[in-house]
Length: 112
Length: 115
Image (cartoon, rainbow over all chains, first blue to last red; front, side, top):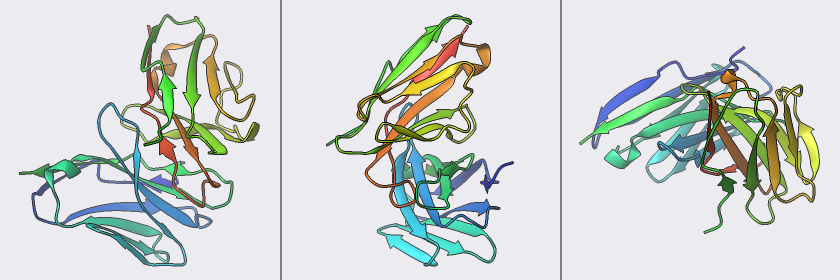
């Protein structure tokens, strides 16, 4: 049972344009959402997070939007840069000491 | 910059052999996680420690996997006996707060190949 779904395995975007990565979840108990970025041969690194009391969180070129009614979140990267090419994982947790569940990832390629 | 240390980076072992991975979290981080990532999938939590106590090991195959964090600092994950299906990346992560309150910092992982 995949509680966090990233339905697009890959995405290609031109440098300077917007990248939009999508994530859907099924568990209504999820209260905290995170995005991680992973380069080959490295562990994931934290990018940005959002709690369910918000619908938007912004950090520089990265913005995460949360639509609780649709159980959907998205990560916007603008402008996209070649260094953003990586696998992006969406993750979610009910909060507290309960575990974080990861999606399957979306491989982003930013074309110079 | 503080980071999570893992060793070895790569491990090749024959099936039915024992294998062990080591993790040293960021100093002061009370929460430690072991994840397994199979190619093309996201990280899956195997075990979560809060200090030296196991908080969640519901996805740990306890017939062959064991994990310990004796002094609440570094941790060891063991597989005995290894099976072909255990080939994966094993990631250790740590955080200073409960997982729902902050992000986790990941190590570079151990790539296990069982032959």
